[in-house]
Amino acid sequence: MSTSRPPDTPQGRPMARVLVMLLGMLTAAAAAVVWLNHTPDSAPSPAPRADAATVARGAYLARVGNCAACHTARGSQAYAGGRGLPTPFGTVYAGNLTPDDETGLGRWSADDFWRALHHGRSRDGRLLTPAFPYTAFTQVSRDDSDALYVYLRSLAPVAQPTTASGLRFPFNTQAALAVWRALYFRPAASAAAAEPGRSAEWQRGAYLVRGLGHCAACHAPRNALGATRQADRLAGGALPLQPWFAPDLAPLAGVPLDRQQRDVVDLLRTGMSAHGTAGGPMAEVVVGSTQHWTDPDLQAAAVYLTSLPTRQPPASAPGPADTDNAAQTARAKALYTHQCAGCHGAHGEGAPGVYPPLAGNPSVTLADAGNAMQVIRHGGFAPQTRAHPRPFGMPPAGLSHQDLADVTTFIRQSWGNQAGAVTVQEAMRAP
Image (cartoon, rainbow, N blue to C red; front, top):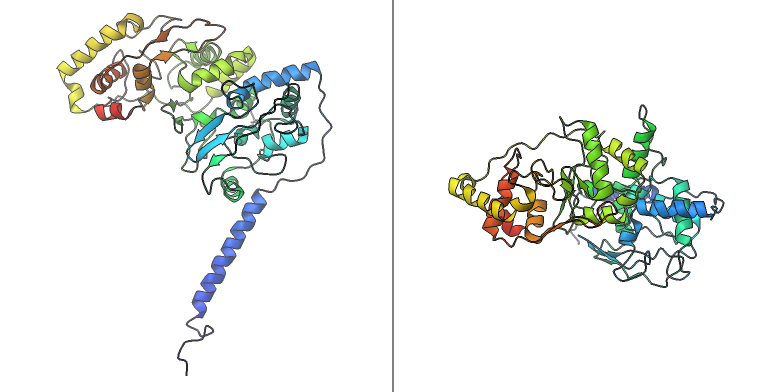
């Protein structure tokens, strides 16, 4: 006779209940993911007018969004796609935005294009990877979406198939994208950044910065799954797979807002301000996008950015004991005098409109010293803009790790700058 306990005994029932509860929870979670990814059907909209004014407006909006930067491969036709965009989860290749029937947007309607921007879905219903920043573009108005569509339709078609995604499993699956979206994405209920008590200029700035400008893509920190955190705060963050840190865009406490607004406008228009120069990826944004913005849009963006919660000046942070050594400090000062002072001045004052100052330069005093070390080690090159068609560049310094740490510490702690010292180990880790 068998002595095994039948599953219907009281002892077996708790495990069965647990399994049923787990199954119910999984079913509910799956249903929630499906529901949160549901794109409501909407009646087809009339085809937008394709007149010259709409094309011109769409061309400007494409500049605002810097669309060509991602959707143009080196040596290829503009907007024809194919550029690889490295991410921590694998490489994503930008699509072809020209109106080619087979490989581009030739068969897309204005509704299809709107669905991609607003809902992050392709024409065939596939979920798009958030490397295409629909998390910001969902803020774009339908009128602006239609103008962009009309402009892209006006381009010469280019037959260039999109390279297959290089995302690793499971990030290359629609199921993983659905879960990510359920956690981190909600389509905007309204494209307008309406906030009671705010001026029309502020509203326009918020719309540009949060939407087509997609500033949070670089200037907001990201979690382990690549989702931006506190995207409206723009507190800065390390750029994935790049040796650059996007700084906090909040205004500095104690500094007049009108002065900070001028700095923002100057930097975005010319690549230079009274307190620094755009470098690295931001220099590319200035060249391809912000130098082409209208003056009212630049001012609106500056008004919005200076309305963010203020940040405090960086607190002075003592370095390791060896940086307090008088001989080492003297050697760092000698390095600066020999290799840097000729352009940046004996007191870090720079030369207005030519060489950026180091005293009071926010890039120098960032908590993360990586940007400063990157420029010292590899050189600094201001963007070439209409306002500065022949900017001066800075050659690589060719320093040892010890010298790099010492001179970086010297400029971060001189002339009123108050930032942490840089160790040799940090200099060695810098690319």
